[in-house]
Length: 121
Image 1: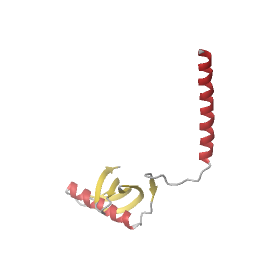
Image 2: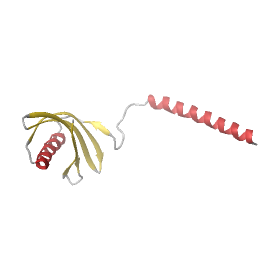
Image 3: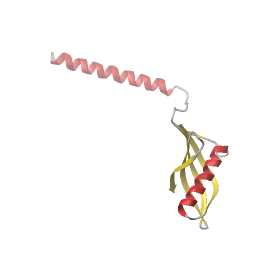
Image 4: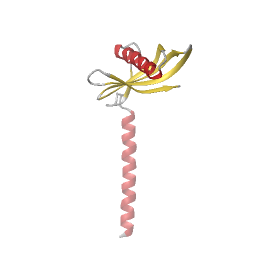
């Protein structure tokens, strides 16, 4: 009885491995599409990207009690959730120096915004 169980488990493991490999090969041939809730790149010139970047710089300036100026948006991506998250690499100027930062802004369903992350790179 024990040998039968071991053989059955080995057969099941082999069948599972074949199925996974076949599925992976099939999936590799599928066209690339955005995943629901996943991040996708967006153009830096899009209106909401610009508006969100300006908001992030103004909000961080307020938090720091120091003036920052947005110089450019190096890269932007968005994630549709309850509202939309925008993650951006921004070049900003503060105290006469240029800094690269990563900012994440949550645009809520009602249109209001919240700066959820500001990371100096």
